[in-house]
Length: 93
Image (cartoon, rainbow, N blue to C red):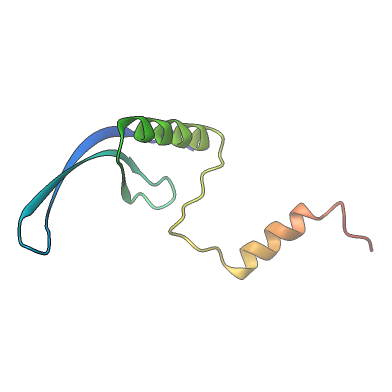
């Protein structure tokens, strides 16, 4: 699997509160493309340290082939095949 480009950024979120006053919130983001689907993903964090820690986690997952796309659901066939392969040496005949 090709190592995707993972970048850190800042997102200045603007929203209105119940009174109508504009509230600005500074969020730190991790931007990347999902290797399975190619969709852009942007996850936001309150602190830069948390964003950097999550970026390191993603780098490890992508390099070790352990990345799981949380937006995709496996089929029953895929789950059953995976389970049977994992239990292959344990099942008695």
